Length: 417
Image (cartoon, rainbow, N blue to C red):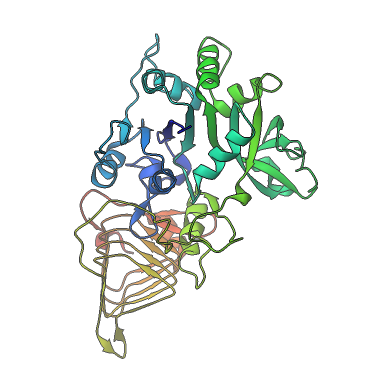
């Protein structure tokens, strides 16, 4: 039987801990890795897995996300069930509310499920950096004749307080859920690790509809899958944990380590970007059988100019996106976005420079994140005097300097002390 699968991507989160990168955009629209957006990971996973019917549920500060979906992801298939469509909050409940939780977001769009009449509904978040063959999870779901399957990743038990933990039997049947508890049960046969929920679900359609309607009628519910619906199903439904470590990406070496990062904070976002520029990156973006898709831009290739002492355009252990020009400037251990200019004598180290920034002559930047369109003047220094940087910019506890962007160019020359 050919399974009909409908996907929902939850892309409406505020991403407050990623401020100021989320000052003007939703978290899924935050740039990543030089030329991508965070949402590209889940959408690429779905398309690469052969799932072409997807609704993207949006809500807060969605304009940047809508533009990205339009430029990179809207397509018209030969069949009516091939689409990726953004869906704004429609306030279909009697109280005409915004989405009150993950379950309420799906409930307010329950008409889309009933119209499509799929066999399965997959519900994935748009907040994480990872590659996943979702077909493997669906096959696991079908083999176990499950009503719902939750993807899970083993993490050290010392981190249990940071996650929603799944208690599972030896056959992966779910026995309970434990929200951010240091004493959460460990994995069967592995006393050093716990199963952390990744927030990705496969539901049988009949089960999902039943639970959504029951939850909507429950005045005491917070209308969230992790806090309300899934715990209430223990003992009533067939529920299984899918071990993400068993996931195999076509084109990757057999037994290759899986990669999943929650980039919920500036520091986590910074570290995930830095993972890309190592000699053997943990996150493989170069697998042609599993491409990371994004918007298509008419950018020229990256360009490196001048080869004189003190004026040499080059990048080492770095990722450089299309259209960037290193005009006598030096980049080390950094991620450089589209259309960035690094002028003569400038030095960028251990930094993330987003699209269309301009780094002036002899400027020095270290451990910084520059949002789009920032202009650094000649001889400026960023990340070398954190006490001074804190007076002007956002600086994390670990010392990462974040300079927020604007829609147009940001000239910070007058801000230098």
